[in-house]
Image (cartoon, helix red, strand yellow):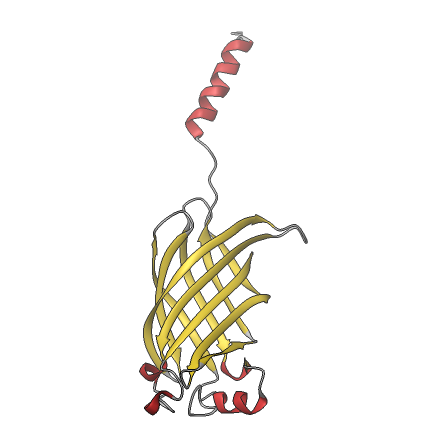
Length: 197
């Protein structure tokens, strides 16, 4: 019976490990944590100052490869009626047909169509935004803040910030544009944490 020396076995194992190469992470699904999902916006009021508001209810998910930084399948849904600007009368007006038309179009949705990484932590995401029943392409500037094990609950979390500016008139909201009573441009800021599934 032929015997193989221990050095030969060790060399064989080293060769096998080397040929296998380093293990790589697979693309994984992430779900946005509703408790850490902020959608904030502002529009200029009569030229004096921006008036800020936010949406209190939203959800979304995406696929992300931690090694390659490849993002795909991003979808977000925001409840239009959850708009909040710290004034009940104004909030009711924002829900009306003058602005969000929340009763006829209760969901604001975004579906990603492409992503363009620029650095390890920055890039642009383009997708179709549907607001008031009108769908138009929108591009967001995106920053990857942090990704890794969460200090609580044994989860794995990615933190992302995104910014864009859109014109509400392109989505059919033209109320008070004349005379500049309410600005056409709406700045949007999104900050979120998403949990790996």
